Image (cartoon, rainbow, N blue to C red; front, side, top):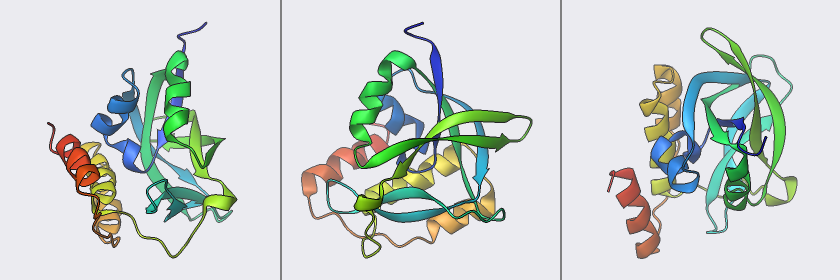
Length: 168
């Protein structure tokens, strides 16, 4: 079926519902949860030269990345794929409060990893805002807030993303 829903686990800027809906109109949050054996890193080189989030596989059961499972129409998936250049998809099991969900997740391709980068301030705000919006655990939100970011000197890009963050 062309418009059957698919599930995507968002853990970076796409956790912010407004950000994801600006990309894929049908995106609807289903549940919050976490995936094990992964850790959050900001080292995926974006097209703008800054760091983006990655759910790095570690194999360690204690490691986890929190996020939001979104449902979206399968015919819109290719639109999201265009925004996720430099990532590849993997299938994950997301452990939620009351159930377990299967979802796709975008993880950084090896050739895009650059640990010397930092996220732009607006990107960092999308991540933190999405975590707060979906009421991820307080200690995890605090961990996200502690991540260092840098100023984006491209004024137009900064303005455009700030408007979306501020709901305008």
